[in-house]
Image 1 (cartoon, rainbow, N blue to C red):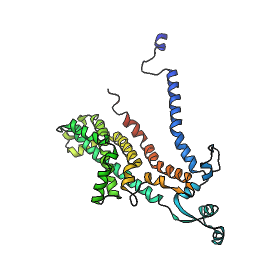
Image 2: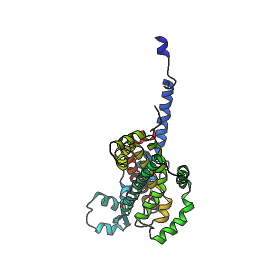
Image 3: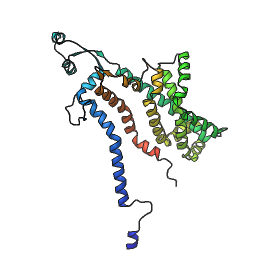
Image 4: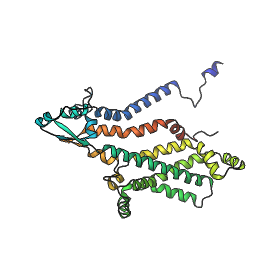
Length: 317
């Protein structure tokens, strides 16, 4: 009995190994989250604290960055500001303390909406088309399937700058530049290759016997796909959607080249948040904080599916 108690599985980690792994994970988490935490803290600093050296860690929180992000301000004389009616809101009072008045709203809200529409729209299309294509490659005998899959994957290997000029000329000729449709189609075309490869692996792990039983019960192929395959592949679809959204949400090169007004997204907009006398770092940090929130929320909502999707098929019985 004592010998059995002393025996240890070759798979299970030793207490020392678990402690070392925990230290490594905690250290990595701190290093990975420190830049995000610093950006969030900078968004609540004043311009003076944001550019102070050495960096200011303890400071008086201020909403100056968010006010500057959402408004356009103009500097006025003290006499003009004194002649104005009393400020009705806290941000009016905050701006007037700096001898400024609010001239109107900034463009950050339309740019943020553009990112939402283009990012989530292209993600939905890429996952939808990728699921259908992956199911076809997984379940049917497609001629030259391996060659087609490699060709699909090769489109992901190409650097965007290599096709930037041809795409720009094509979009300008077709009238798709600076439009929702153009950006959604472009990001869908880039992401669909990733979606096909990821989802094919997930669908391959779903036993064919489930569909065959459904077909025997009288289901059509499409009904079997919707009612049997999709529920089993939901973890893979969620993981694929997260990866596709991250690319579409963060993409900068095509967004800078093909958009400048109506369809401009947040990545090319954030660097141009210029303040009086230089870069308005609190406003930039505030824009970055808001830009990170949708991805963070989307990932947290799908975190269970993401974890299961990444490890799907890793253990075989």
